[in-house]
Image 1 (cartoon, rainbow, N blue to C red):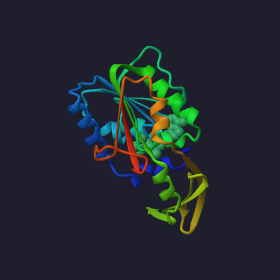
Image 2 (image 1 turned 135 degrees about the horizontal axis):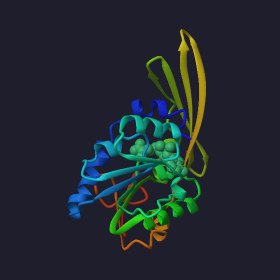
Image 3 (image 1 turned 30 degrees about the horizontal axis):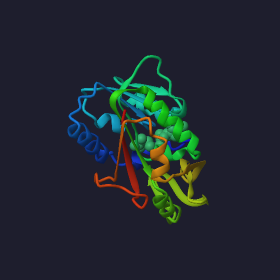
Length: 235
Ligand SMILES: C[S@@+](CC[C@H](N)C(=O)[O-])C[C@H]1O[C@@H](n2cnc3c(N)ncnc32)[C@H](O)[C@@H]1O
């Protein structure tokens, strides 16, 4: 997943400043001074690069190509190829663990979400924070009805369509037409699925955390009708 996408991802995505504002707001609100941060499903590098340099930064992602780009862009941070369901750090613990831009939605089974929650809990120092965001079913229903989207990047073309696989498990079908010369193209294909679950179910399985704050992008109280929800989980 995301192997063909990696080459284009940075060019298609915005810089994630909104996430940095969100993280900084938490840091100020709780008067925190984190020493390190682990970004799960870190993509190439953009969230970590925007955070101030007071922390030691670690990133994990499953896509080798994403990580290759990350390593080329930033040498001073540490990247690991790991599956978010099986995170493994020998003795290291973290002050902040993030999993952002609906990365957890890519896990279709709820039992896998629970694995990420438990691993993140274990990897956190006490009193510190696991922050993740999700697309809700409300949002996925909208996504499944998107019209086809086409992007031109240089001479390459990317074509996105979405469909509802079942019960708003959304399937993104992405076709990458890589221009080789003149009007010749290599075609690559990637399918990416996203699933979501109700707030109550998610909250129940986060019960190890001492406090959970659930808000929308504007820090207002969120509900299942919000599009994107943030879970701020304090160990
Ligand atoms: C929607 S992107 C989000 C990336 C990044 N957090 C951002 O803000 O753009 C999802 C990322 O999750 C990674 N990913 C998907 N499944 C994964 C898994 N099981 N373990 C680790 N990373 C995974 C993909 O490689 C991709 O980089």
